[in-house]
Length: 248
Image 1 (tube, rainbow, N blue to C red):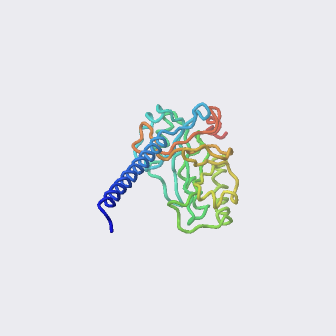
Image 2 (cartoon, rainbow, N blue to C red):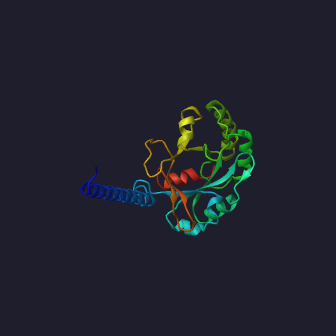
Image 3 (cartoon, one colour):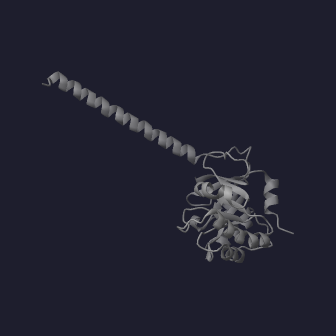
């Protein structure tokens, strides 16, 4: 039969369990908070990657591009189109104002799985101006926000070819592919070869064959309210100038 002494020992043990449980929870919270602030402040070595850029769409709202340019941002890749008929509502304004602020600018297209590549090419070409300094067109291939159907690599390759042919002819530059991890695992080794824009949050890419590295998806830049994607270019000012040079 339990005695008073047994009861007291159980009470002490219970208090110890509660204490160490709370202590563990506090340590875990502290680690999580520390990791969050470390991630928030992460930036690649600027001596190795001196050229920083952002990618934006209408989700960033109205942008003060002169303040952006003054906050160590040298280039901007701006969403232009999606699918066969969608046009980003902020594209024309963002492109014009970013260029006026002195940034190198480029346009990207969100490639959907439920419209033909030819239709999507027509949309992009109709919206993005030619004959001006412009970074190579970017094709954004990802599952999030895309049509639920998942084409086979062979099907996607055929539609990408139908998109790239007219787009690369119109702009005189090879496109760059942006793939999220899931899309890259599914398609990367089995689709048309193009230079890559890699997404590797807070970690230097393990691959070495890339043009842009997106290192943050919760960055902060003066002139933009809220989070924005942050990127670096592989190379310096000369590389950026070559990429954005107008086609003769």
